[in-house]
Amino acid sequence: MGNLTQIIQEYKDDTQSVYNTWFVDNDQRLKAFRTIRRGVLQVINDIKNKTFPNDFKGSSLELVLNCIAEQKQIFVGVAHPFYWKPKLRIPDIYENQANKTAFGQFLENCINAKTGEQILKEIVRLDSQKIKGLGPAVASILYYLHPTLFPPFNTAILNGFNALFTDKKKLGSWSEYLKIREVLIEINSKHKSELSNDLGAIAGLCFEVGSQKMLIGSDEYLSEAERTKFEKGVEKRRKEIQDEKQEENLHAEMQYHLLKIGVSLGFDVTPASNDKSKAFNGNSFSFISIDRFPDLPTDKDTQNTIKLIDVLWFQKGTNNIIGAFEVEKSTSIYSGILRLSDLHFSIADGDEVFYIIIPDSREKDVVMQLSRPVIKNSKINIKYILFSELRNNCDAICKFGSDHLIMDKISKSV
Image (cartoon, rainbow, N blue to C red; front, top):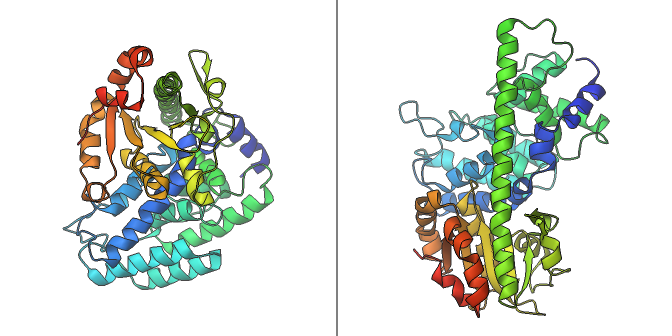
């Protein structure tokens, strides 16, 4: 295994490692926790109400796995084990009602659990059901429910674990996963000051090693083929990070346009709480935003979710929200809709405007999401604005706009 402390330090020092690009410096990772929890609750309700479909596609479970997969890098392919394979009848949680119910009860008991021991009992109970095709891929969902108790799990994490700890654990078995979990928790407790209480940090280390994006020990004995594979992995990661930075710049641009328009219309404005330190073209968000987020008439958890909405407009000097905007580049449009829904059902009084801001290429995606019956039936009025419309009309709106209704000139409804 070599010197684990040194390996951890190399992992943290690498600016392109998942520790820095996903675990530490990723606003979307933090936003994903509540979105995924909300999605799991929807899966549970769908199973209870017998409205959960007999296919993965179009199900609330698909939304949950898509939100996880959007974390990229470490969660690429997380949805694959849940695709319904009719010929193999796996995973058998779609057409078998008893298995479907068992899965729903498992999720409900896990989401309500307070300790790791309670969840372990649920895993043992689920495993005893012998549901064909349903294995520890579920652990990636558990991670987003209890990040300090259960690490995510996939092939790359397994391979990295085996390389780091000279083991031969295998994929697809709950018993193997639980043994891996025990080791990771033990190692993590010894290196907690270097890593985190959140097991995503040490799982990310396993992923880096297992996907051969990080070499442990000397690389002088690598074959030419192994070295070529490693170099391709490094180059692929470099390009992914470059693309993500371009997306972040585009996201910041749209946020800045919305903040600028809000100020010009006479509103108090604020970006998401974890975006205040950002800037666009030298224009700091914090410089034009309110210093303190107003207290809202809702519980703390819901207020924390509302604070993560990309841009909010308040009536001057009040906590009355006039406009709420979610900028969705490549992430789930549905997750943005959920945050706006939290706001709508918590404190909406009918005067607000809700908008999803999207790249022009994603118009079909937003129309599909806003057409979902669960959104249509909720009576929440969400419109959408294309990036090009916001960019091209920002200055004109600032110059000629008199109230928030000016945004209707560039928005579309479903």
